[in-house]
Image 1 (cartoon, rainbow, N blue to C red):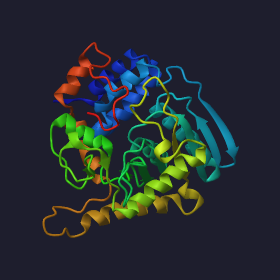
Image 2: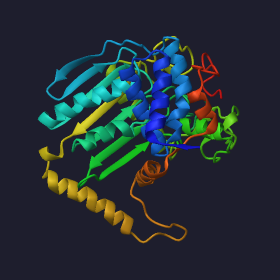
Image 3: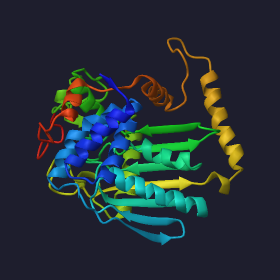
Image 4: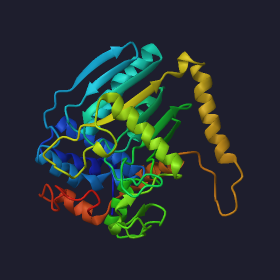
Length: 349
């Protein structure tokens, strides 16, 4: 079914608040999740609410975190999330990074001891809407079979980038370092559809199209994605003094405990390197030129990176956001959670 952004936001906020999060923090969580659903990234939208509600209600997400920010240098700082909602901590950490980069030209801010923060595109767009370049990376729990290996080690470890163009133009790129994000498997499960045989493997290490049989994800582009997820783990885990690789906490192991995750924001002020107007004009020009490239046979149009999500968001704003009926029924119910995620296998349904 379809619903407006405002209606979906209110339903998510109500459920998160009912689980025990403050209205202020529930509002931010809802904003990030609606952003994802509106852009067609349903794997990081409303499908996650039931899991978040259970973790909040069981204490694994700190309902009253004591956020702190420590300036560690002229262009750097550490935001401690006290295992509060990751969406809130990541957003506030990015605000600090934006303030620093606006004054100093660049900023590197680590957000440590946070929960799952959802779609990284939300945070890099914060920077781009402020006229800055945003880069964000974060670690996640081990679910990926390393290139040439048989056991999982790294997480899907995503990276996102956004840069401002002229006017309202923003180019945004957000990707997991796996062929596909785990959330896409969850989305396929909720919709009862098959997945491509290039996404994941079963418990024997054999490629599978059944999302219910997935026991390991595959790195994007083989050794290249494998190397990239290692780099992201170093930057968002080791660099912040946090667990790394197979030592990162499982999303489902114990919902009464904090995740202790890390995320790193890098923000660059174009005005410290070139003319701001020239930079923004160049970004917009590139977007137009990419769209103007003659499409290959079988392709309708060449899109710039992330444009498919921009198109989906415009459509959502006009015609509503598509939400699975089962998820809608949960959102309007009185239940905090109907299917417990606690202590499940990471690949459980």
